[in-house]
Image 1 (cartoon, rainbow, N blue to C red):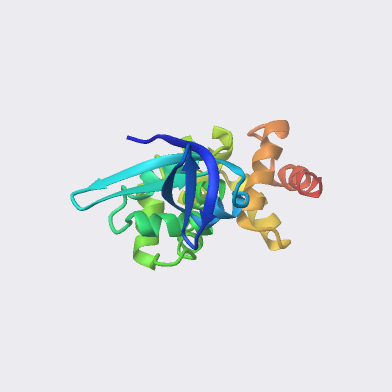
Image 2 (image 1 turned 90 degrees about the vertical axis):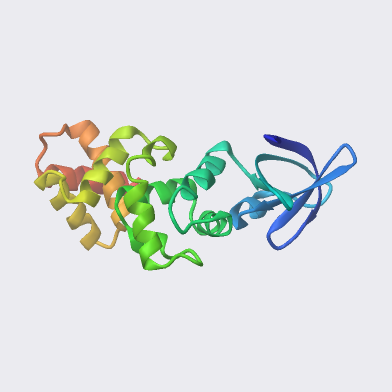
Length: 205
């Protein structure tokens, strides 16, 4: 089992990279985001690896971080999501964006990835909502708030503040982040006016 490759880039293809490790070139299939983050031929590279072993093939998938690799594994636990589709999702969304979409139950955002239809997107946000926070890269309170918003159970002032900020042109994710930050300083008992004011202050920084 190969867990990580450290070597130099030999060649970058449309969906893969060849990593030269002491004269042996390994082919690793990667998301577009990972490929874009790599350097040019001859430069050093490190990839976290997921190894697929089948009766007729051995395939390596490479990731820029261990978190991206965990998302690759997690996505494939959803019915209808294989390795190719999981890579397409990770090519379209960063790990944090994907976590936010799941927390907010935003199936439309997930469905932007090629090969993801409405039904699969719905399964992803539904089946992964309790498993995604650990991979979110954000504080638990922020993801918790977003989950409450996505499920429609957030407190009235919070919902009103997020709605007000969204109406001002901010994305729902930006609004939720700002309100979560506002709650840290204002407290959970703050009214919507205070949350909106502090949220705007966060967004203006």
